[in-house]
Image 1 (cartoon, rainbow, N blue to C red):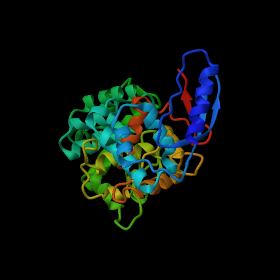
Image 2: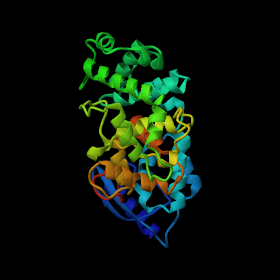
Image 3: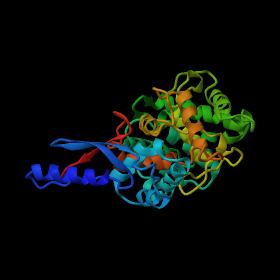
Amino acid sequence: MFLFIQQWISSVRARDTRKREIRFPYGIIGYSLIHYSDKACVCESISIMGRREMTDTKIEQVTAGQNRNELNTLIRRFPAMTFKEQRVFLEGLYERYNRREFVSPDPLELLYRYDNPEDREIAGLVASGLAYGNVQVIVRNAGIVLDRIGEPRRFVERTTEQELLSLFSGFRHRFTAAADLAHFFLGIQGVLRRFGTLQSCFLHGFRPDHETVLPALTGFLAALNPEGRRNFLLPDPRRNSVCKRLHLYLRWMVRKDDIDPGGWEWVSPAHLIVPIDTHMFRICSIMNMTTRKTPDCKTAQEITESFRRYSPDDPARYDFALTRVGMRGGSEQVSDRGNWREMRVKIQ
C-alpha cells in the first residue's frame, strides 16, 4: 500500500513540471485516499495494517513545539485518539501554555496586582464583568475602573451612589455606563455588609454535594442584584445563558496555579463549569466534547462533563491552555467545516 502511494506521488510529480512538494503532517497515520488538485490534497486518514497508535512522545513533541499545523491537526484528530493519547495531549497543552508569559492581553492580568484576596475578589468581579468585546479594550477599560477605585475593598465599603456617578462620569464600555457601574458597586457593597466577603456570600448557597456551582451562582447573583435590575455586568444564570464571564470569574478565584491566582479556598475546583465562548465552543465541538449545536448553559455543562473524564477534580484545568491556542494564532486554522478526518495539505 505504501509503495503504491509513493509510486502515485512520483507519477503526479512527473506530470507537474512546476517544482512542488507534497507535505503530510504525520507519517504516523497511513493515507489511502488522496485527491490531487492544483491547490491542495485532501487526505482521509485510515489505519493501514491495523490501527497505529500515535506515541505519547510524538504528542508531547507537538504540544511542546511551535508548529501550528501539527497542533491543529492533533485537535482535529482528538476524537480518534485513545483515552490515554487524549489525556497526554491535554496535559501537553497545559504544560506548554499554562504560563504567565501567555496571559497578556487578558483581564486576568489585572488580578495579579492584588495580594489581598478580599481586594482580588472585587477586582476579579470588575474585570470579568467587563470582559466582553475586544480584549485590548477590555483590559484598558477594566484597568481604568480599577485605577480609579484604588484599594477595592476599602473603596467599596466607603463609597456612595453620588460619589460613584461622579467618579465614573463619562465612562463607557460598550453597553456599560456610569449608572451601571454605580449599581454594580452598590450591589457589592450590600453583599459585603451582609456577608462580610464575596466568598462568604457564595458559600451561603454552596453545598459540597451539589454537582456544580450553578445553584450557588444563582444565589450569588441574586444577592448582588436583589432588585433584579437588568445590568450587563451581572448576567442571570436562570436565563439558560452560558454565563461565560461568571464562570471565568469563578475559575480565577477558585483555581490556584501559575495562571489562576485563587483566593476562594473553601470552594472545590471539582464543582467549576468550563467557561464557554464562541471560540471554545468551536474547539470543543471539533474535539467531540459536545454534541449540542448552540453554546448555552446545558452545552457548558456537557463540555464540563467531558473534561471531567480527564481531570475529575479540576474540569476547568485545560480551559486557559485551549483558549491560548486560538489567541496565539491557532483558532483561525482550526476549522469545523467538513468532517474532522479531512485535512488540507498545502502544495508549495
